[in-house]
Image (cartoon, rainbow, N blue to C red; front, side, top):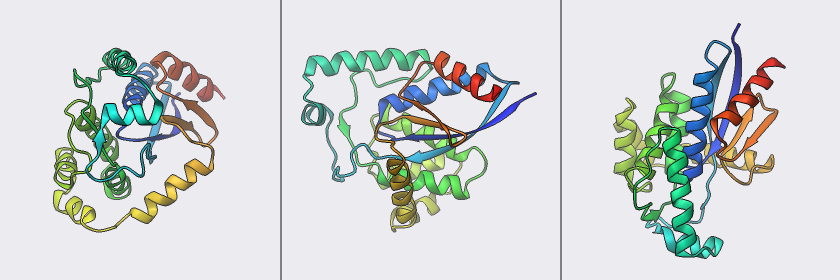
Length: 217
């Protein structure tokens, strides 16, 4: 018997630990096939909501935000690279060059969840994470975002029309307020059946154990 779980994955495209966490969650669900299935919903969270459209140098940003040195940042990047490799996600070898505003990416993800075919929001999320962290593309670029949407079978013209307007902006802001209002202040945050929270880019084994216990009731 398979138990179906609702999973809200609260995250930001610019967050490398979100890529690691999603890969680990995917591994856990694969290992639990036949026992647990999941309905995934990707929810918006902005690590840097005030980031201007031109973005900021990643090293400069991390130093300003966390006070970390270049050596500390290099060590963290290597840890993230290794954790990514464990779950099949490739990070750009020399790290990301810039940090971007991701609000428009969240608007496209909202649209994909609302109007896309089953699985298209999931595919778009993975494609955006790869564009950001594997290929270091500009996550604030209309053309980059629309091209990524097209790559997973979404309508490019519709994506460009959304990006040229403020469509879904109010809905994304409401969802962001909802999650921060419920105590989510760091990501990834994985909420299962609206009740159980798993925080951070945990290893697949942690997700697997938690999902198994929740499914068992």
